[in-house]
Image 1 (cartoon, helix red, strand yellow):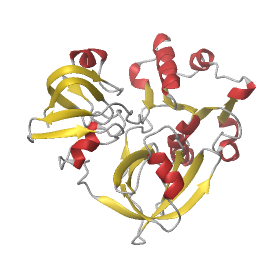
Image 2 (cartoon, rainbow, N blue to C red):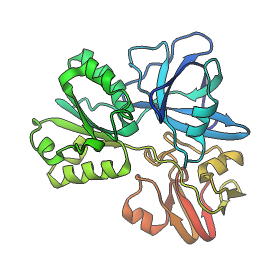
Image 3 (cartoon, rainbow, N blue to C red):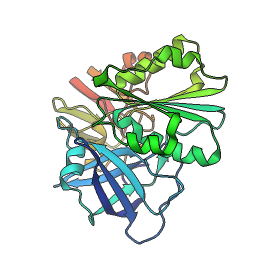
Length: 321
């Protein structure tokens, strides 16, 4: 996928305030037709014109994959972010025309699994909404363990309990409740696959614990879309296109390339998929890697970069774009 890839023209059909931090948005096709089919765990990239600044943020689809009449996403407001979530919360209203990408799935249910064990934290619940809606009518075995800061901020807790009853386990931080991860992982039947989505600390904890307990790597799945961090502006030279671009304080290298007319590839725009991986021709300084795609050795070598989330500090950075 790239900036020039086909988009879906949509109309905002509904905006719902879920709690103090989260709003749910429903999109329908402007031409009245059905949405493209998708599988549980998929995401779309929402294209925003934020008063002249183009923002493109990925959001997991939380609606039932069997319902092609529209797509639903949930957006958590981030006051300290770069502005995408604030734009969605403050400016997107019912009836508004927007564009979204076609769905891409980097977090599907593994067909080899005999049971699916879902662990969610906060807004990380959203991909599991579509995954469970897909798996239940198929008769698949699954259970959800969902950690929330408080019941007031626990998005969709009641809806999940009503739909899936004893398959749903809720843990409330302010009550001192926590997932007993080692006990949970040690009692799973053979053939169980583990899925985690939530804050980085939670993902790292779950993956490290599973690895330490001997879970095979191909049975542990995670998804986290990282927002490009803000920082000091810097200059980047693009060897293939012969352009010199300035990356702004609240802009990613990928966004700066797109603004300069360089059509770079992407799928997630959040450091997770590897699609935008770019070779570093020259690095006179330090690359601040913020992705979870490159290995530690690749990051240390400073020969590769994920322009969707990484930044640079130094005299010169030349990329093969």
